[in-house]
Length: 114
Length: 108
Image 1 (spheres, each protein chain N blue to C red):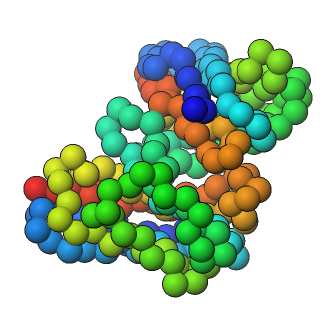
Image 2: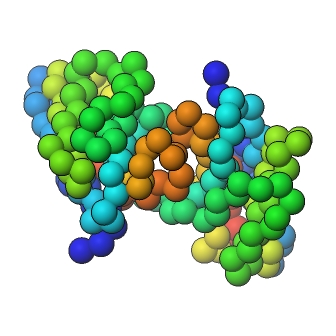
């Protein structure tokens, strides 16, 4: 399989649930990103990992917890979310976040928090 | 704070029309400008522009960057219904900043 994959594609969860989003890239990249896309808002950068180290946390609430065990995998652990966290969560990868060039996006996980 | 502004916010045209989408930016340490097409899923990459005045083309799509006036345009000629999407502009500096997109609807 090539490119950037994300699972699950759709997720419905209650405010007390704990769930995790998974992202995997098969492009040999070293940087991975989490974005949030809410309706009628620009894409918001959440986290950046470069060579497995977190280099950016864009003032994201602690109910979102990222994990990057290796350069190919990125997780977003979710707990005690709020309804306003409902959005499309996109994962992306690039060669090296310090270079900040083209990012390749996964298909996203559409999250609904009830 | 880096800022990327796209206009118009939405556009409705008929098949065969030509459209021009605009992207202006204010960023520190500009590196490149990227155009993406987003349908009902993740953005797909269209163009990366780094130099002023050099047009990039891919089929009916073309784009050019003006680093003096700090803007870029994306042109689509002979539009088709399959061109209907949100077109996103993003600028790389210290990080990647996206505009809010232009929603293009092409009617048959």
